[in-house]
Image (cartoon, rainbow, N blue to C red; front, side, top):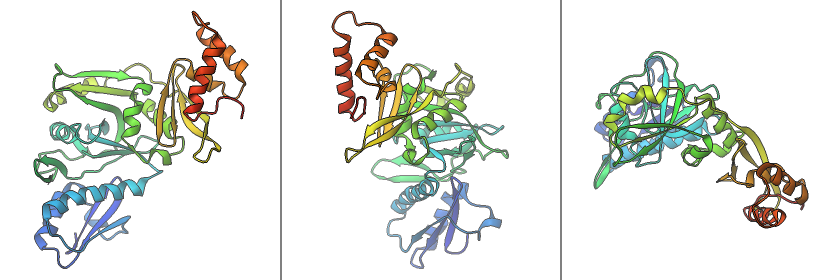
Length: 349
């Protein structure tokens, strides 16, 4: 830290916070202390920055520190858009460098879980877990953002919360866990879930997913290579540290499915494509920013889109059998109409 700036590392980005002359020295000092867990190596202090946040004045230090946490996060996410997969998640690292990402929206309990887990394991982040296509994790050891009723969130330095440092080895993603905090739960339950079941939660909590090549199929592939997706149900965060071995235990072999490009209508009525992943039973498709998980006969129709109605009907009957009543052609035609209304191109144009 120089006299009027603080440089932090966030998801591999170097972000310099520069204070104007009117900012009190104690605010600069509080910022440096709160962000101590993310401070860059002193030898690299003068290296080029990836982003800069200018702070000309501060009228309310508590509100400023809360907003700064958001600003640094947004700069780090923007710096890595299209390069890293970034989950809205808390994370801890074991001594051997394995990282567990606990995914959930704001208010799901990630910070509280971080405070309990990172007293036993290395603190990676309470906000974002980012990793590359080799599953290498880039830490974001920001201050813990702790809710205070009627006041801005308190920004607590990891050291002040008793959280552990990172191990001195490379970090690698070992588990992706969707949080399901249930105050009425009895004990801790860990369940391996198919990607199609987890996709709505994961896609909603992934930053800049649409800018990654392959989007949803890339996400499915990375989840499979990390051992699949778990769902963690618990009542109290204090119960979770004892369940780490269960969380890391291997589950059924995870298949990323088949990546597909499905024809859809664009905003101007033009035919474009949407990224999808097909697991044999369901198709998960991300068209624009809309995620759909298709089951029943819809996946079969989509697999044969463009082959003509007669061929699609034959494929549906071959895969699912004839309906117990009614004309299969009429039923397929109705399903095709529903898909067309949803923007999918399933017939001749």
